[in-house]
Image 1 (cartoon, rainbow, N blue to C red):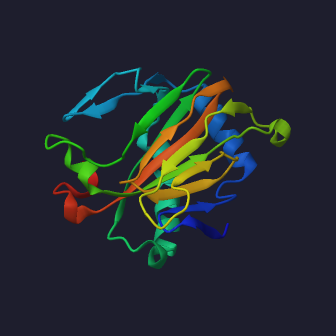
Image 2 (image 1 turned 45 degrees about the vertical axis):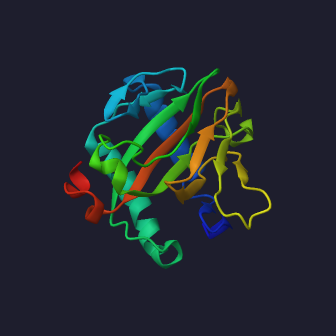
Length: 208
């Protein structure tokens, strides 16, 4: 589970979760309540399926807390590599992208003066992929659904970084980077998201 930086602002850790852990989480998601995922616009959470078309799965805090703590612990263990004041995790959230789903280009930080304080506090976005394109792992496979991140460093020859999800992979990138989820062409893409955030930028700390 070694950390590898694709760019100074984008890192990967393969096998953050085992295939069995991925199977267990997918099974839980398949039987959990779900609702269409919303976006935040000018301080309000709204449904806009022209920008984001996928589902959020609902779990009690007792289910979410262990995986969130594990994500935060990994970040803390590698804190010196991230150069960040993040000191708590917001999330995690569990998301599924079925055939035809997508998330247009966006940033995971505040874009409007009325946006909630928690969005201004986001420093690094963390994504765990629970499945990928290869069905040999005894996990449901999907086609499409790549994560595309747009770097800002002008010294980089190619600022468009494409990440193809693999089961158990953890992706970490600066929340200020524009990124998108490409159209899922077939199957269902399962993922877990959390945001390492800074309590100094959020007057409510980790409780926003």
